[in-house]
Length: 382
Image 1 (tube, helix red, strand yellow):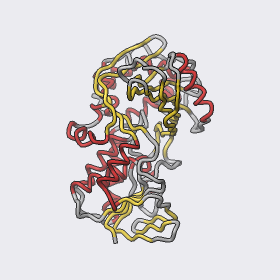
Image 2 (cartoon, helix red, strand yellow):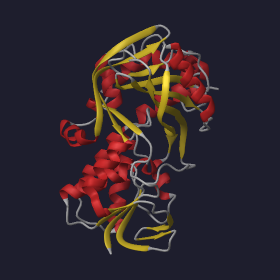
Image 3 (cartoon, helix red, strand yellow):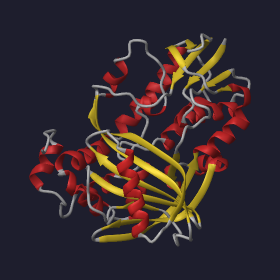
Image 4 (cartoon, one colour):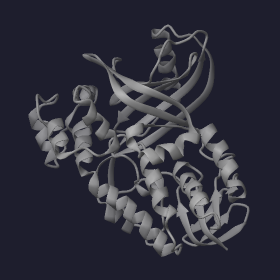
């Protein structure tokens, strides 16, 4: 019987397995992934200020590219902001994890039944454990009110160098469509770049063919000729507007331990989960009681603590999604990116001070005062 079975070989569970392999190498851990490799098909990016220096050092073997500074572009604002920015590819992630975890990893392992202390695979294999952690991605819940960040990205090979020296994390200079829309570009080499079409939308639906056309048009507008699409990824991330985190957890009578997006462990404003996944991995790295109830309590506590500390960001999300008409949402972001660079950095890290929070709210509003006040009081503005 294993002490811990991690179900789902995505970001959160793999980081847990990697940390435990270092801090508790004798612990019997099994990591199950239904696909052919850990990590799926993703690019995870983060600001250096989102993690501690020690965490950044620990992540270094997983990082495929780092830059100093990043750009944002809006119709009335173009700005370069300071700070380091880093990306992890699923290929590097899978290779490092496979090397370090070895036989702890089982790929092509589709799960038929999952309980707190038992997993049954589609092929009939049964694994017993002191505890299982479900890290298989987000599920819809009536207790969480969410919008969506949805995207399609292509890593492309260009005929000639693109000329970029740093990422553009938001280019919202194009026509707005399907909510707040922007392009995100990461220059991985002189002639390869990830181009991602992203929408902050009310609905989760993605039409890949339309996004691909828009990516091709964006490249053409920049005089980039795509000679090959090296990889394509797509995703839909939750953006929380409101909810009841205790009811979210209480809705599961089985009291299943969870991780990552399945545990609502993500930045409420961006949907990104790497810093929070790393924090949970660090928390469990020192854990000693691997009973299902103890692991459940640890994962639930991490989730509820994050929720309680990020209510302000959910209010900002309500302003973006509920007080603004979809085609006007870019005005909210354009105003925000004109603020102090340190405040913006602290927003991504989720560590804004009380003064920061007041500063974000004061000044000439990009939206009508009536809809904004109505939204903050809990009434939908449209």
